[in-house]
Length: 255
Image 1: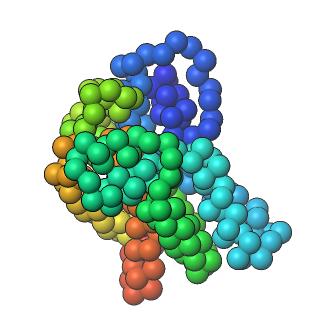
Image 2: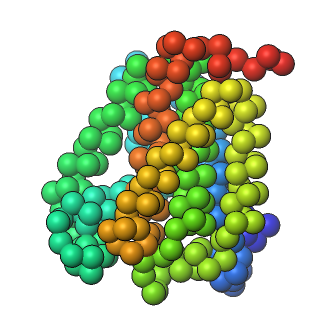
């Protein structure tokens, strides 16, 4: 349970574990990232249902974007902005890594955040039930699974930082367990569409991981956060053509 508490504490604002820090348990916490993602999705879904009874759809859509940022403490958003500032700076590798470490936000980070929020807002605004229910759960689940894949399959670019613990203790075994649980949950939530979206998430994170490893010599904690944010958006956007043309893919035959 300690490992799950570390995953919950790292990816959300929920702080349950009060004991001593255990680097091995923390490093293996990525195993539970998809489950934490599912929890976030359930909380966001419940919020959507409740808020829809009190506010018009545009207001609810904006609230959902803000609520997700609040529940995660903005940790992935910060990594997303830092990654954009570094990668698009056009500087050598070491300078890019220093820019990503800098707490100040640059123009690329701000522009990227505006685009991210606008696209998420419009995605929420354009979805109807039951599409939005499945999309929220799948986006939260698969985006956190993408972090596990990035951690397990690509080297870490720095010699220090909490990311080194993930890279040291999260390997193929943790990835297999995380992927297995993700497949089961995605299938239960959206049947064949869940598996198709998992493949889309894999393709995206593999592309990002390969590209940034070639540029930076590996990935960083900021890149893990950027991976989660961009994968989440990818799922929201991919749901539209899937649901529009092949809505039967979302309907489990046993329901």
